[in-house]
Amino acid sequence: MSQAFVREGAGMPQVHASLEAAQSAAEVQRAMDGRQYDFEVRPRERGGYLVARLRKDGTFESWVEE
Image 1 (cartoon, one colour):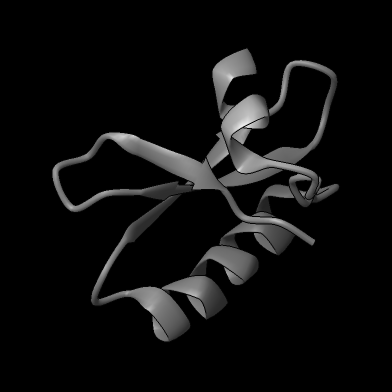
Image 2 (tube, rainbow, N blue to C red):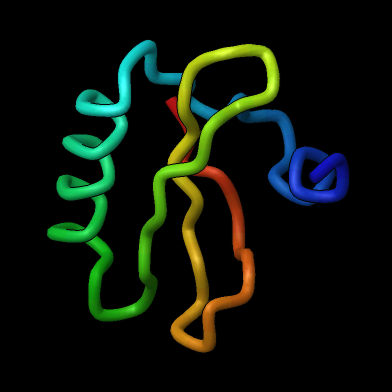
């Protein structure tokens, strides 16, 4: 997972306090970028949830940023 943060650049991944908030954010991203990417909610080790942007083949692309 550390590689994802390095590849993402200076931006910080958006951390959501609840599963519902992360799912809602994933739906918004899906509506905006859904033709190019898939999105998946993943729990964060230190609490909260992140939204992963995935290529259509299922491989990790980046985290959705703030």
